[in-house]
Image (cartoon, rainbow, N blue to C red; front, top):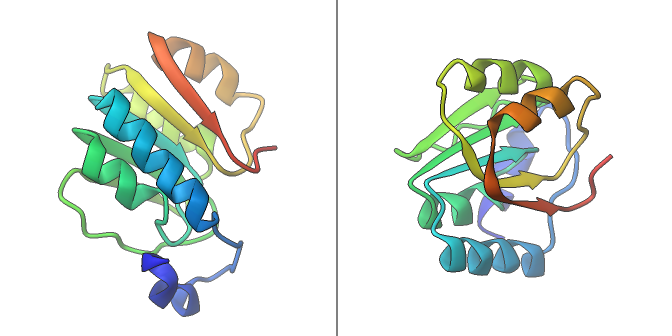
Length: 129
């Protein structure tokens, strides 16, 4: 995987998606071409990078790590739990077209997501609690 070089710099080694999942996210993004993608669970960016290639804008958060992607169309919320990241995102008054959940979602996230998901949004789940 492309992001493996960043694993050693992670504060918390949470594990990463398999290559097949990263490819599936890439194919989904190519099919959808979302304006806005939001990802919960950045870790080393193995799904962030495919989202950045296929989406106009990507927002991503990780509660445990701060690994910089340095991608021009990606806004990271490092060491930020999903509720705090979604609260910040909500201030932008834009809608999410593709939501990728690869991490823990908090109960308070549900209301925020209901307000920010576009009516035709696609939600992709991987290892989500």
